[in-house]
Length: 265
Image (cartoon, rainbow, N blue to C red; front, side, top):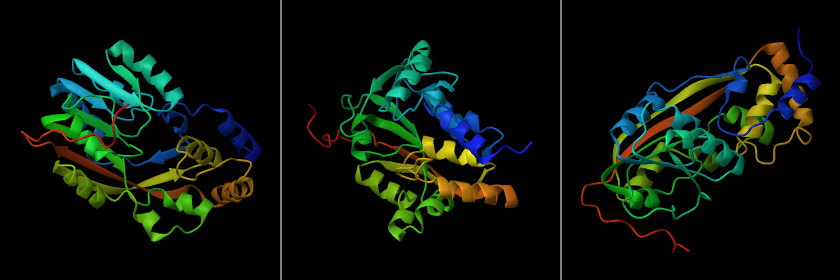
């Protein structure tokens, strides 16, 4: 039976969006995965590391999926609901969760880790990553690329300027990483198909990924949501393109530690 707009809205508004687990969208949305397999690559690097840092761990789900963690494993997170969830998930695995406001400096000493990882970071402080890496250490990250899901963004916000569409470009990541003294060893990008099968999936996604449509609320966007619901019912899934890139960088052996971006308190 087709569910009504009001039913779908109420359901999507009531569900928790804590953590970084998108399993609520199973059967309601699909996202094509990058070919490189970040979870596998991250797990391989973790199995060989002695001290690892996961920046912006979310609810800790990705890190917890690794079969083997290094003897010293630390994860940072800023959002309190995620901190609580990550702590419950990672502490039994021997990983420490540190509350960090996601601004420099990272709360760790120079050359503290031989591996730093991060999946879909909101911001990347390259100088800080270089500072906390040991010489010869590695940074591995899967990141959201330019104009990702902009079909949905522009449905609500209208056409975006070119600078917004180009933001988070992998070429800029390369430039910033190299400026921090890191050597790029891998850089790949892909454009992937994403489908939303009902308006509840759209609402859940925008509630969880809050930077996509800043200030999104069902009350404020109800008319647009109603129109999109009718469109999905008549034409089928709403299709968008998700962009992702993989970047891996190495700190050269013998590279001196960089000064923090600002003085630590």
